[in-house]
Figure 1 (cartoon, rainbow, N blue to C red):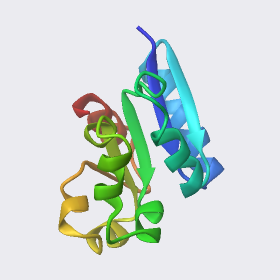
Figure 2: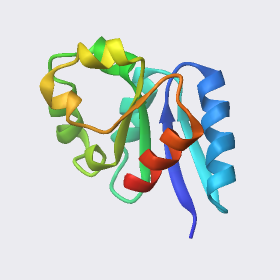
Figure 3: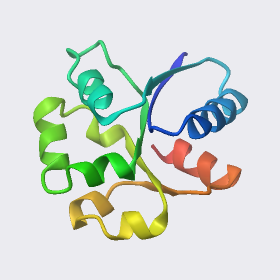
Figure 4: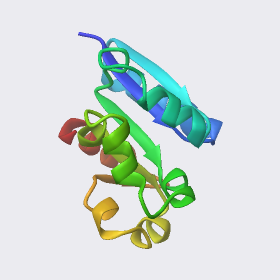
Length: 123
């Protein structure tokens, strides 16, 4: 089975590292990229079936650009995405997010291979 991943982060090094780790952990991986918040919203708004990601790695910096209504907007845009979201970023940035955001799975940067693998398996 092909594993479909969306990485929403403006840091290309993060994209490359995650793609490499995913290819090590899974046989058949397809990685899509969202290098800006606008790109993320465009991909998230695609009709059902056109964005069947198994996991969405979402940089906390994107959330901080729209801190007040991020999850509400995400659920309005595409309610199927939120259960697949893993927030990535630095712990201090994540801790300053709203309580509803802090309920989502979080992968702290710099992340270890073990932490990455644990999050992927959980989601």
